Amino acid sequence: MQPAAADALSLRRYGPSPGSHSHNHFQVLFGLEGALELEIEGRGQRVAQGEGCVIGPGARHDFEAQRGSLCLVLDSTQPGWAQCLQRAATPPSHAHPLAQYLAHALQLRRPLAQAHGPALLLEAWLAGIESTSPSFAHSGKPSPSANSRSRAIDWQRLQQWAAREWHQEITVADLARHVHLSPSQFAARCRDELGLGAIEWLRQQRLAHARLLRASGMPVAAVASATGYRSPSALTAALRRDALAEQAQKAQ
Image 1: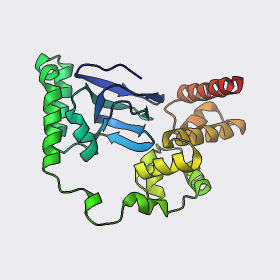
Image 2: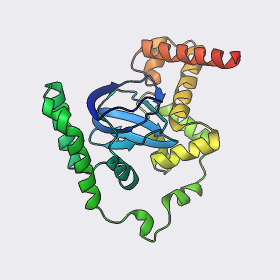
Image 3: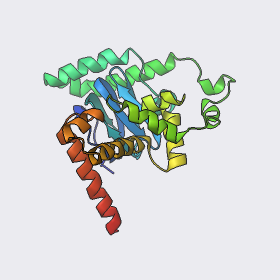
Image 4: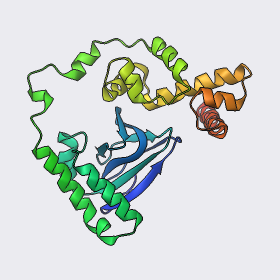
């Protein structure tokens, strides 16, 4: 777990190499470019351009961006973010222009952005909460998570569908959409039924298909293109990491 930090804004680029950690503070993400796939304590989350999320202290999260992602990141110890985490899964629309301005100001090294940006972002998010209607849970309608449990997932058919689509970018949101679930519902079902996070399942399926194509004699460059990797070197690195992880597991 990474140590707590004073409120700080930064611009961060994420790539296809998966990461996993937790913090002793809140972390707030605003998507500026590309799409970042996350799994936060078993819940799927996607932060694309114009989207965002709050990650609570101690929450283990896995993340990767197959096509790259740029985010404005706020590390904060302000307790007000707990209310944002509980009552609003995504930031209000008026927070995005502010995030874009702060990102631009950080690039220009304007000190006021770093000094006042964290408080302004929190104020904007809280203002959005105050203007929203009561939550779905109090509307008298059935819980969407309860309904999702009644839908069986044919994992083999889903795997076959993914194998036909590897040539393009596939995200957890795409998988969830294919089985008529939200990303968070799909991530929960994946962990419950397969014992894997959704991002990890997606990564394993992509690598398994790549190995199958390589075993058939297909060149590395062609396999990388067919399985959605950015380059032959990215595929080779992913296969190497997976082989090393398998060796380490066998050695335990």
